[in-house]
Image (cartoon, rainbow, N blue to C red; front, side, top):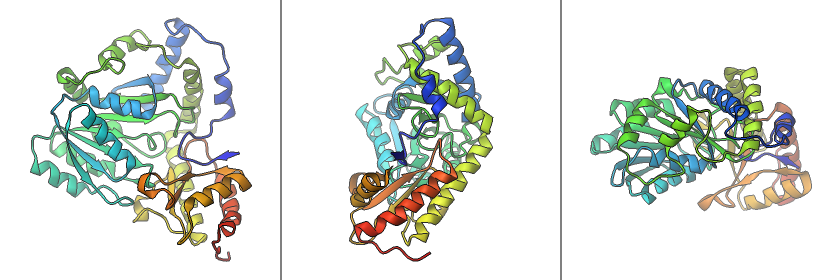
Length: 365
């Protein structure tokens, strides 16, 4: 069975093999060496000189950690959302007592930096801005560099959900002025689920000193104190650290710019393949279409779930469906992490054969 979903993504064999090693003392020298090596490599791939923490968590745990370490109940927060995961970020902040102003954009369309500028001008008391870089639910990549420029102009703290972009799509944490950036191991990092990575700027540390939201497991003061000892505060997912150690070495060997170029090439190949099949992308403007996940509209009168079923049961390829109000209306193809041209070629060939089985007439080549 071939996995072509936006996460978890397939893992290289040597990454999986690394996980079969016996446990070690997570307070010992050997783990400390892995921790130190992984943290330094993540800083390079995050393009930051700031702190990076490795949490035993899903990406959503990293999002929660970013909120509780920088905010107090009652803080005014601006949420810029164009999909399921942008909405989730706002909800997390609200659950911990933040006063969130939600600026929503049509799903399939990008966040408009001008709208962010307008919202920040309208309420100078806003302290924090939340945004998702790559909206996995709709296959749209927001112009984070432009959004960050607006946020910095207003001197606000910028928290970024980069779970399905970082490590695949260029995100210059320091150069763009992103204060907290969150990603997850099961996406472009070629590692099983279970780890989140969070970068933390000096401005974020300043906010942290005043932050009053409750935190225990996610307390970055503790995380930082233990990092100095080459440890984590709590028992880490040791096996996934083994996998991460191998995957990060592979990524640096490929080279960060080569990784970005590969994802751009495979994203375009997937989109071109969908159009050749007569299908329409969900992204309203292909300029903003994601290089890690392609969202495709189901043909008129056809439930996207049927396409998923046929692809899985008869062609051995697992693709994703739509979330929330998009269930049955779109299907999504992941092309991030350990993915090659031949993987996309195989998917396009099988999809061409599967579509007529659900009642869709494929155009001749």
